[in-house]
View 1: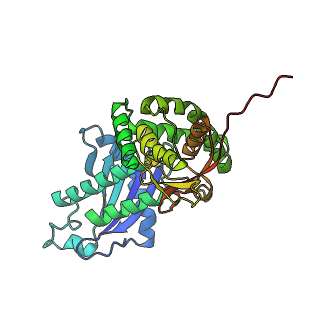
View 2: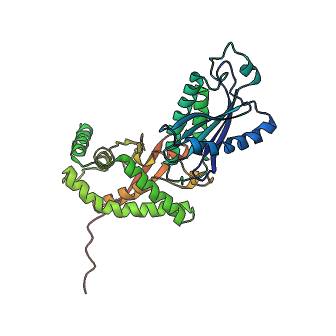
View 3: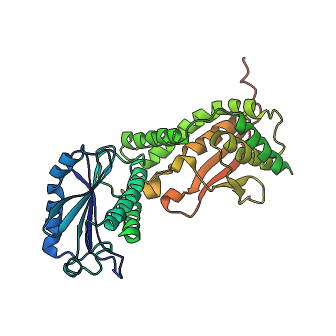
Length: 162
Length: 191
């Protein structure tokens, strides 16, 4: 299972991106995207912004779950109150997707309640840290988040939940 | 003995004061610093100076407020006592923190205030332009406040930060040195 996480500002501008792999089931936390896929990921992720706009008003929740699917790429979305989008692209590894016996494990089945819950927890933790990051007086709205501390915390949240 | 008395006094006075939301303070102060950085084109040395100056002007007036609220009309008998009162009453009243007093020099004229927590610095991360980490003293306004306040009670001091957790140091430490007691100076005689 590989993940590509991005924060998209209110002008649909990217603010932050981070790639990581699963740490569950003995994963080493490394992303397993091919070099080609890494470029494609950005494209896939941003193309789902249209879907975000469609679904964002359908329920009052911040967490919109899986909103888009492109072949084996699933996009989960979390909208902050300020219309900043957290998007997480998750790509189950081919073997995990094929194996049904461990379908309850996080990652193997991207739309299972367990996975949804794990991603929700991840988003919530990132959200908390995001608020702290943008509360810094030297940060401006829609400015790229360069803080190394924030990156570390996102990484930690990824390790903890995904 | 005197030390615990000062702590009690600080705690007691603080509870009587009106309070303001800490985040309001953090954001307001943060905005000031950020705006100064912008106005002076990230000339952090100048920003430090400006903060110190602002603090100085605050301190000169704040001392009156402090004396009124703390009801300590008595003069401190020594610079050590002054330090106690600054840390345990002054900082307690206005910022609800009690910095530790350490590193006295043997002549009793210099000491350090070590801040475990700094209410100004919540959420703050210094700009990562490679210079702010070495040049900007984010909370420099406090130095000015102390300098201004002590000057009004006949003590000329020099205060500066020597380390700051925002810069990646282990502690936030301010060094304060007494330069001299200002004697009441007679106005120049009218001839």
